Amino acid sequence: MSKEANLTTSQRLVKHVLLWIVFGYCYQSAINLLIKMAADAQPDATLITAFAYGIGFNVLTAHLITKYDTHWPIIGAAFIALVGLVLVPLVLFGSGGLIAWPLLVGFLFTLPLFSYIVGKIKVKHSKN
Image 1 (spheres, helix red, strand yellow):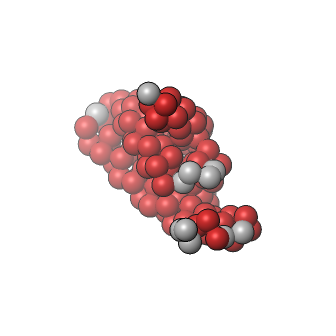
Image 2: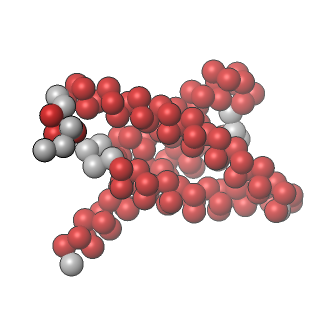
């Protein structure tokens, strides 16, 4: 029997929240790098390029979230996005550290959405 099976719900929640906070910081670092890469690739259309890169990155991130968090992946994705895109920049840099509003709203919405979709795809493929 695994150690995870012996945890109470509150212990499991604390464990997940701590992991989500760490992953949120990593997510924030990756998103900032992604935006810098978009600015270098397409200086005239940085916002559109960054959002396109972010969509692909969020699909990959959703895959990782659903792979490693089998209990609450959608809640975890929303928490990770909120911590990574709002809380970490505010704590480290103040309101000037937040990304552009269209990107912020888009990434906050798409990470939980893609986690839901990827989870459904994985369930469907496991039945086949």
